[in-house]
Each structure stands twice: as C-alpha cells, then as structure tokens.
Image 1 (cartoon, rainbow, N blue to C red):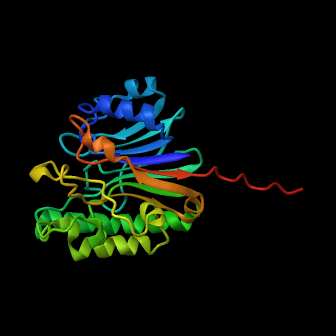
Image 2 (cartoon, rainbow, N blue to C red):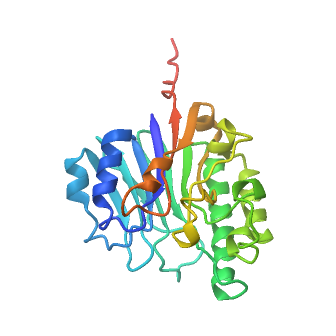
Image 3 (spheres, rainbow, N blue to C red):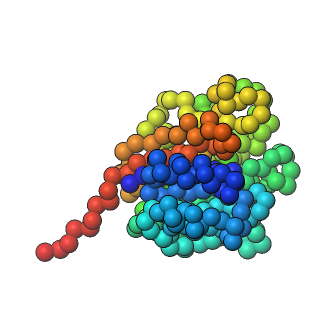
Amino acid sequence: MKIATWNINGVVKRLPLLLAWLASAKPDVVALQETKATDGEFPAAALAEAGYGSATVGQRPWNGVALLARDADPVVVRRSLPGDASDTQARYLEAAIGGTLFAAIYLPNGNPQPGPKFAYKLAWFERLIAHAASLQASGHPVVLAGDFNVVPTQRDIYPTTSYRDNALLQPEPRDAFRRLLAQGWTDSIRAIHPDETVYTFWDYLRQRWPRNAGLRIDHLLLSASVAARLKDAGVDRDERGREGASDHAPVWAELSAARSPRRKA
C-alpha cells in the first residue's frame, strides 16, 4: 500500500500535473492541501475517471483539503478539527479508507509573527494535539498526513538565516510538533532516512528550487500499528521541477499489507 501527501497549491490549475503523477506513482491514498477550490469546483469527476474516489472540504482562495482513494470512496468521519466551533477555515478532513483512518491536515502558516495569525497557528496546533491524543487512545490504525507548516529541526532546512523570524521555525510550533510525536506517532521520512537531508518545499522566490534551498514541512505521521508496516518513504522531488508545478513535492510511504486478525478455533 502506498500513501502520500501533497500540497497541490491549486487543484484545478494543477489538475494535469496531479493526474499525470497519479498515473505514474499509483498511490493508494493521497491527502491534498491548498486545493483552493470549493467542493463544487473540486475535479471529482476527472479524478473518478482516473480511478480515484475523493472527499473534500473546499474553500477559496487559499485553503481546502481532500482525500483521494484508488478504486474506493473515502468514508468521511470529520470535516473539521474539533475544539473551536467558530473556526471556518477548511484545514482538516478525516476519513476511513481500507480499514485505516486518514486525516488530511493543512496547519496554519502563522506569518507574520508575532500577531493574530501566529496565535491562530498555535491554538490550532493545540487542538490537533488534543484530537490526535484521542485518535491514539482509540487504538485504530491512523495516518496524519499533510502540510504541517513547521520545520521540525535545523537539519530540515537549508543553511540560511533568512527564515530566522519565520513562523515555521519558531520554538513554539517546533515544541508542539515534538509533543505531537511524543504521543507515539512515527515520522515516516525520519524513520527511513534518519540522517539524510530531505526537503519537501522550495519557495518560488530567490531561485530556491534551482539552488535546492528547501524545507521539510510536509509529513506523514503513523500510529503504532501503521508504523509497524512501514517499508519505505521518500519525496517525489521531480514533481517540483515540472512546468507550472506546486512549490511542494509529494511525500510518500509504502506499507506492507495489514495482517488479518486471527480467528479462534
């Protein structure tokens, strides 16, 4: 089983790139972020023709998340992150696919900081930590997939001081990410590549893609039963180099087949 997450940065605009990648990479489950499309604008028909069922929580002009399942339809469990009924930003979608619960996550950017956007980011992160704890306690296989908008450590960013004041690198979100992992989630990329330089995002500005001046902010976090099945993980970097590409590349993980529960004689 192959799972992936990709901040597509406009699903309608980049639909040809998405369809080409789906055809070549053949992921079984994909979490998308920054779809930048309402539910009515989301290209569900084109994706269905490509063999993918979909669920979406859409919003223009910036947000929106979706889950895609190959030869299946995601069974939606939640369309928003619990903890704040007044929050209307489309940043969270939770659905069951093939016996595993997947959450598509687009955590707030938080810039400029300090300020209300950074405060919203930290409050949203705390809500995610609380909900993730309940998912862990459920004992179900769970994958948290998305753009977390946090660079976990300095080895997850190219050598620079230009991001010194950026919300993605501040101590508070980094601490929140550590506390999330401490619940028992496995960072799939770091589990497979503990010491390698791995980036998932290259800004459009200042020639950061040609210079490989990247950041790792897109993550696939696995609950214990899913992590036990982890075989490989990586980033499809070439997608970032396509004409008209998103500034993110797909992050993927390969899982062995889930074991069927033993029947009593």
